[in-house]
Structure formats: structure tokens, C-alpha cells
Amino acid sequence: MLTRKTIFALVCQVLFISFVLAQETIYNFHRLTTAEGLSDGTISGITQDKYGYIWIGTISCLNRYDGYKIKTFNYSETDSSYFSQGYLRSLYSDENGNLWAGMDIGLAKYDFKNNHFELQPGSKDVVILDFAELNKDTLFIATNKGLAIYLENYNEFKLYAHIGNNAELLKRRVYDLCIYQNSKVFLATDTGLIVVDIKQNAVNRIPLAPAGNSNIRKIAIDGSDNVWMTFGYNSGLLMKTDILFSKFKVYDNFLHSPEGINDNSIGDILADNKGRLWLTTTWYGIALYDAIKDTFHSFRHDAQLPMSIVANNINVL
Image 1: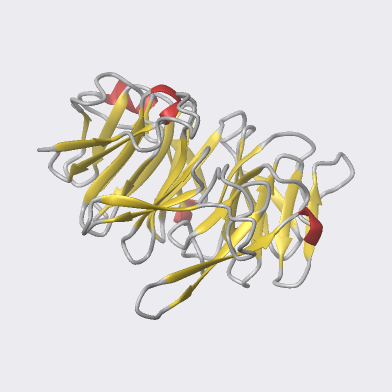
Image 2: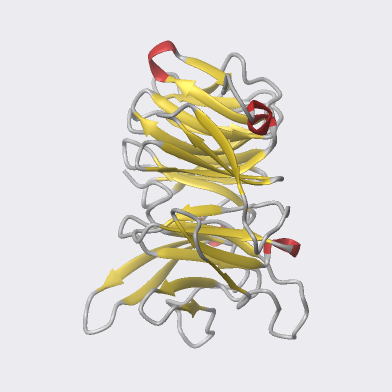
């Protein structure tokens, strides 16, 4: 099953990355665009379900790709396979085989047997932004109302309740989240980085000297236990710290556009299943972190290379 840890880059199309191993790894980008039947080019989420179908959320509808053709699930009053309203924010396939759609009207689970999505009780009017799975029973969810949780054994969605100090920190909007060693949940919030220690039942805001009180939009932990976060104006700055938050480094490589204008942004960051860090940008395409050289290698559009990305404005991984 492919999850966010398998690289997908999306912008006005879907790009599938294949790997060719030689003396140096070569990355080929295979495009899936409106010419192949994709509904539109504003991509909000992507995942692969237990049957191998690839689901792609766009601003106009949901697309399902079987490797050959695309089926669309439209936003329509008469289409029972999808909602009549609501913007899709994220997609996720969990270890139990459930397919989740994060909407701005709540959390929906796909009923494979009856071919439609069901809004989960308790999630109505909660904006669902991202997912992180602790185990087969517990799914943590980033929402506009704070950290939420879905318990598989009880089929229950609820906001995460914490009894103790700093409980109010979990009521802030959570933009992104990730789990470390099945014991801690890292939350990117509008008040900075929040860490939930599940085993110790503790919640703490982590001081990040380079960011101050800036909001954190994206977060990922790579295979070397480096914690990466985006922050600053337009999320144009990238911060790296160790898991103990003892040292920091800020990368401003992507802050400015090629014209020198301070309008570039980092759209998404992702640690893949090999522990490598990838990111997307407004102007510089996709970037891969080189840990040995402590620098980034960018993959950009090249009109002379048909296997390059189709444009440099990438939104989602």
C-alpha cells in the first residue's frame, strides 16, 4: 500500500516517480494530467487503497486511477458516491484498509461495498487536515479545532482529551502532524511546535529559537531522527533540529523566487520509506535533501526532457 511515505508530487497533474539504480539514482517523473482524464490540476491529496487504486483529490471532485483510466466521483446532489458540498483537504489509507477523506465539513470513510463515503459521527463541521497512524486501532488527525483521534475498535471520532497541564495547547489549529517511535505525536500548529508524549501523558510546547512564536505549517522526521519544519513568511523557511531540540539550522534556499522576490513557499515536506527528506516549492519544483553534502538537489521542469516534471509549482507530496 502506498502512503505519504511513498513519493508523489502534484501540481496541475499527478507525477509518479520511478527509480533506476545505476552509479547514480535517476528519477523519472511520469505525468498524469487532464489529458489523461484527471478532473483538474488543483491537487489536495493522494493515496492508494487496499485494492491498488490511486485516489486523487482535486478542487472539483475525487478521481480514482486504476493504472489505465480515471473514474471521477463528483460533488453532486444526485451522486451518492460523494458529498454535495465540502472541499477535500486530504486523503489517507490506514493499515486496516480504510480509505479516509478529510473534508472541510468532517471526516468521511469510504464504504467499498456500497461505493460511497460516509461522514463519521462527531466530525461534522470539523476541518480535517492530515492523518498520522499510531497503530491499527488509533489514528491521530490534524483539525482546525485541535488534535483529534479515531478509535477503530469503537468506530469513534473525537477531539483528543488531555487531563493535565497544557491541555489548552491541543485545542489550537493543527496544520500537520507526525509520530515518533509510536510514543510521541509532533504537531505543527499556529503557536509553534507541540509534542504529545503518549506514554507519559504529557503535552508541551517546544521552544524553537529560530522560529520564535511563528506558526509551523509542515513537519516531518527523517531516517536520521532529524525533525524538519517549515515556518516564516509564506512558509518559505525550513528548519532542521535533532530529536532533543538541542541544535538548530535554518535553510533559506527556497525563500526567494528566481527573480529575487520574497514570494516562494514550501508546500509540503515528506520523509519517504527510506528516510529521505523531500519537499515541494512554488518556484523550484521538487527538492531532495542530500545529508552528506547538507544541501538540496532540485528537480525542475525541462522542456527538452519529457520525463522531467511538467512545471515548477508543486503543491503536494
